Length: 227
Image (tube, rainbow, N blue to C red; front, side, top):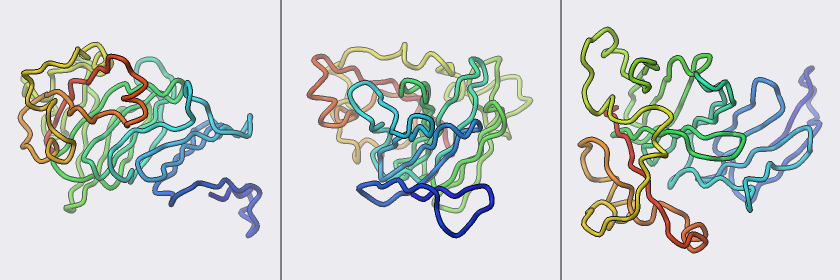
């Protein structure tokens, strides 16, 4: 990754090296943080400290299971903190806090995602996919989630659009349930199951390192919307 000054001179003023190919970039509005995706992992370069931001015991954010294809940094609609939005070929849109690396919210679509755009304070979310689609979703403060542009103005939204509020998905985490068939699946198998509302994540949701480090791992309830 090369950084250039404001006059865009041919010679870069800074070079940041990654172990694998860079697939997406996003710069914060304050120009203090550069989020860089390499495969399924994101690292945040702090220009002031001249180093990667530490998220607990690691500088890596393992956000997705396949290549991350788009990143965007925008203010949270309620707290104003900077949020990292990411899309991937794993069909997920994720909202992650840049401050502590915690996952705030996520959407699952029916097709691999290749691009993302966001209006100020996450008022609207635009995603593009592998099969040539572009979808616009608006943040609805009444139900605290994103709804499709075609749903705007309707008095009643479908349960898949309203089941989980924007900031409370983490509160839906629960202990593994032996009777939940989704939690016994592998990720590839889990992604092939047709969308039918919210469901538990598969057992291999966590990276092997995180799974070993967590004595009693929790898996999220994933909110799904059709794309």
